[in-house]
Length: 400
Length: 172
Image 1 (tube, each protein chain N blue to C red):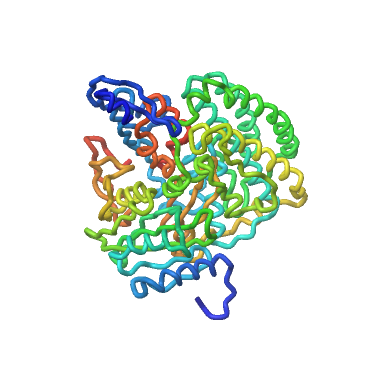
Image 2 (image 1 turned 135 degrees about the vertical axis):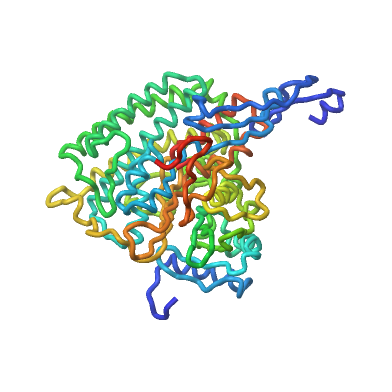
């Protein structure tokens, strides 16, 4: 750039790609333009508004505006009983209802000191991991669509449909399950459930390879994502990133491993972290890669759970549910690894009421999105779409 | 902590981390509340909060580089508002610790730690949006989830919802 200035070139417009500075325009005088992206924009994955200040094609500032989907989750929680909050958690992250329910139930169980039957734990992990795959399929499919690849989206939704059918069979609902209850489950799984899940695992394993060849190794897709929106590991931690976003920056941090809950310590699985050979560590492609590789790990977990699960003989999924859910006075912060990162619940109980005094949800994508301003600065406008897609936001969870 | 009580390993780690902070700041901190579900201490002198935060982040024995969660709280009986922050140290130490800071209910303010952890930026904005305590030194103190012209702070215990918003009836 300095050389260009020395050569007497007046106005230079540049963007960042990996660690290189790319010159886009020279000697062109333009005014800064305010461009509103959203609230109704297909690639904002819901109702998010980004107010972009652009200099030609380059973004000088992108300011997110949220709250279009705010439904006062935390206020509602203070007015209903503990078990009645479970359906609300479904409606936060509607793509991963099982995971949200599990995080909430873990928090209340920790406060009440409830002993959970082993079979319940296995069923919870199976449905949560199935839901994780379903959620990653939506993330990968819509990420492709954002960048102009339509076919992988259809493939992803076809496979997701199998998972939704399985979860519907178990719980009676396709997205908003209310299946995991405090201390147990709404129902035991149907008789042939494990057999069908195994069939799905056998069916889905080759599909992940196909998806890899179709999208992840696709030349155009790689060109659009590699080196875009790089986030260094230390800044990512400082921004409170978690889940695939943090692992995309090369930090091996998975709550299932580092702060284990449920039966995860007994299970064998890897925590995929990009090594920098295929992608630049911390870019959009790395974050996509982590999600794509994680689906395989979820399949491994599901298989192990099916093998180890205690039989249903004499099992009552509601046996450990406390008669009256009234935790002792105290506070708890408990979290679980959601498809989008760390979903935490802060719950405060006064020990007298059956309603929480305070219930705060620490939303993973809310925190991940807060880095948007830094992440998009100096990027090209089309790359902004890639960055939002790679964050994998669900506005229901951000706005709560 | 009570003498002779068996405590878990994670609680011992939290207590050790608290001891390091207490050594430096002494009376500015409350005693350590060693409960099993969320061990915490309270910052009694809120004006030292940013110094304590920097100390917690940078001290070689603490290295709390990750602020997991910041929650706003209302204490109507004490006439106070407050926040509780959950910290941990990713990839360096296994310890976890929560910190509480309180301020006056009307016109109170808490120093902002957005300069220490970037993640505090939006989480403090959310606490302000819901409870109305100001964070001094925050780079961008606006509402985040509610509209800018919304009246009142919804999560306060004595909150009364406004009758109309731009001519639209609000309570249903």
